[in-house]
Structures are given as structure tokens and as C-alpha cells.
Length: 163
Picture 1 (cartoon, helix red, strand yellow):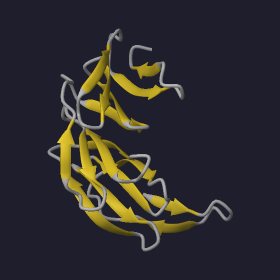
Picture 2 (cartoon, one colour):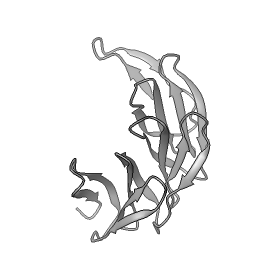
Picture 3 (spheres, one colour):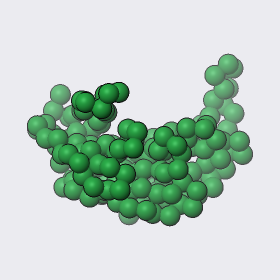
Picture 4 (cartoon, one colour):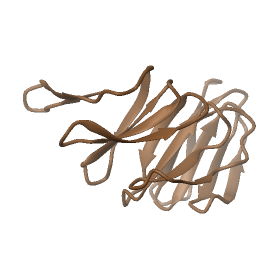
């Protein structure tokens, strides 16, 4: 992953450490950290100022997405296994997994104090941060590739490989 200056377009830092393709990257809410997700089976937390990896979050298979909670306390990851994981952003400790999907999870993100996931099992799920599934959403005929909650929390929008 690379950090670029908006004003000049120049690369300011290269965030090194992954041994495979980096699938996603996201800034923490305060802009001081970055989480990256890689096909090498890890998510990494980087210090933006120093450009160095400060924590590695290991997984049993490829990690496809990583995101910070709105307050920056937690890191949520989605990987090719069926259970997204929630880590403490400071310690790197695995706090919990979000169970229920029957296929690889392609998307996981926070929406306020809730977690939204999308899976190749054709469903999206809405969880509370404690790991309880609040609702499963079905209707797609193929992999659900992403999901997002409306600002008022009343609607869930999904994308899928079934068009």
C-alpha cells in the first residue's frame, strides 16, 4: 500500500510487510493508523507518521477487507473463512468472531455500533458489536459482494455477482 500527497501526487510512504496482494486499506478515524488486508492471511496496522507496521493480525486464510470502528477502538476483518473477526486495535487481541455465514465473507464494515457483512453464501448480515446476528438478508442468487446501511438505519443496500 502507498500513501500519496493529495497536493503533489507524490508517494510519501510505502507500507511494507505483506507477502501477498494487498486487497484493501483504510484509515483510522483519527488518520493516525491504517489497516491493510492481504491475501497472505494477515491484516496489518500501520503508523501513518512512521510508515511502519505496528501490529499483525493473523488469519487462517486470505483477508479481503479491514475497517476501523467509528471511535478507532476496534478493527473488523473479513476473510475467505466464514467468520469475520473483531480485534482490539491497540493490543491486537482477537475479541470475537461473527458467526452465521455458510460461505466466504467478502465484505465486513461498521455502521455506527453495528457490523454489516456480505458473503458468497448469498446473504448479508447485520450484527451488534457483541457478535449477535440481528438480521440475515437473503434474496440474491449469487455472492453478495458488499452491503451498506442507510444513514437513518432503516434500509440495507447490497451488491451481488447476480447483478
